[in-house]
Amino acid sequence: MTATTALTPAQAHARLDKLTVIDVRTPGEYASGHLPGAHNVPLDHLDAALDALKAAAGRCDLLMVCASGARSAQASQRLTEHGVTAATLTGGTAAWSRLGHTLHHPADTPAIWAMERQVRLAAGALVLTGLLAARRWPRTRWISAGVAGGLVFSALTDTCGMARVLAKLPHNRPRATDLAATLAALSD
Image (cartoon, rainbow, N blue to C red; front, side, top):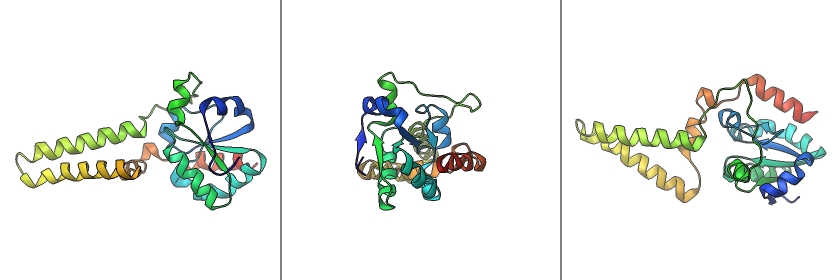
């Protein structure tokens, strides 16, 4: 594989036993359904996992996965900058499940909303709060304007600052023991 390789869900499904799958979503998103055998290394912990990922890449091809393919592409690019070759799953877990492929759900973890859904809730709540509060305090309408501007910027740059903030909430953070166990499994 080259650093810019993208695998379709059908290609990844056919080679799943030959791939080390790294899911770069938040632990909550990972718990909501992930590819069979996937390891959870959230995107914001990727740098801490570099040594383990290099070790894993030496044994098996890496496949980076997220919900849509955007974060996994960022992860693949960051790994490439550190000399690690990794492919990304085209369309992410959404495309994987649309084709009828199985997603695994850990039994001991409560379901957490996907990050996109969390962003929609937070953005909508902020806009609504700004508009309602503006009836009493007119300057609070700038809350709504700020969120709208952030959403436009997010669409234009294919980044999401609100998702980065929401990823820091406790239910979206990996437990230290979970991340340590994942890194140990990748290093073996």
